[in-house]
Image (tube, rainbow, N blue to C red):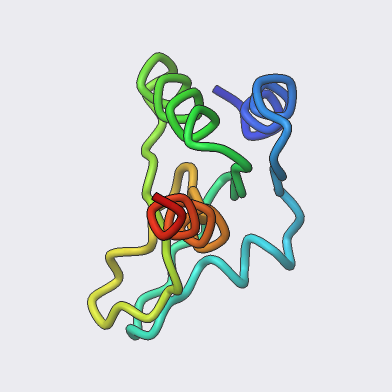
Length: 101
């Protein structure tokens, strides 16, 4: 599947952010390790259901997907050449829900 098709499909699928700009992709192509792998698309979901939708889309279209937190890993585990799902904002929402219980 072409990168532009992945980006357009994900933009139609979720209300969160979907990025394919070179600057954003380069930012997400590194973590605290020495590795660099440029992803096809970066997704910043707004809800847990959007995460599920992105993962289902990736599975259906056979595109690698990696969840990313702060990008502080030392072994390149936040990197891949497919879809990066940035969860740092979503994690804050989940923690707030837990604290309100």
